[in-house]
Image 1 (tube, rainbow, N blue to C red):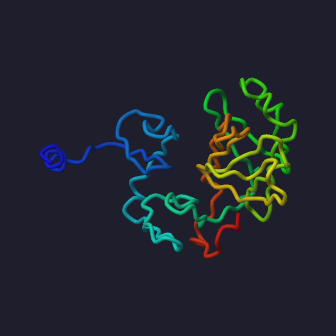
Image 2: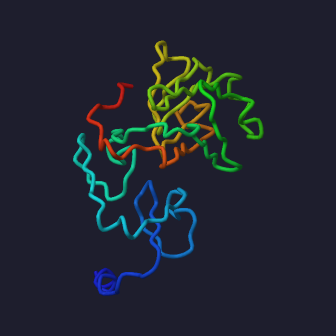
Image 3: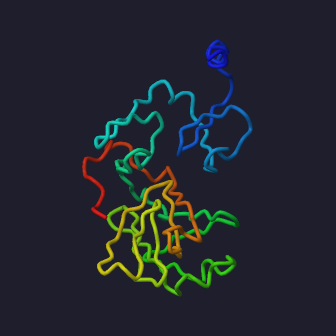
Length: 211
């Protein structure tokens, strides 16, 4: 309790403010990635900070102080994605190695894309397919042997008969090759450029597709 009171009495740090898009922690030092979840920090524009309105999730009521596409509490997708005349693409950030850029759709992602990973032998030649439809990115498992996951939830494998496409949001985690406990052996973070988001229309009321 003494430490908390002392912390509240200290003045707010000055200088550029960088925010983690996943956990919303703020950094004032020269950090590039969040020390909690490894997300790349985003420089906050001080001129927009005063006029920016907080966004409330229509599904769970959680208030977002930083614009994001998926609610961190319930997973609701409320930011619309638009192709602003540029080549639409997503980046898959592995736990180790360089990001994988996908800019051609539909794109079948498989063993050839993760050949340097030790567990690549558990990935099908054609494992998942990425599509771009009506300004939204989707992923669908191709009835793989060891399955796939999205944010820790299995979306494909031997026990799945009807596989549905699921919408992707910035910060989502894709897992490939699930073990018997459901843990993915290979994981990627999804990165969607924020410049492609349309903030003019505001939050969408439509709920995410049923999984």
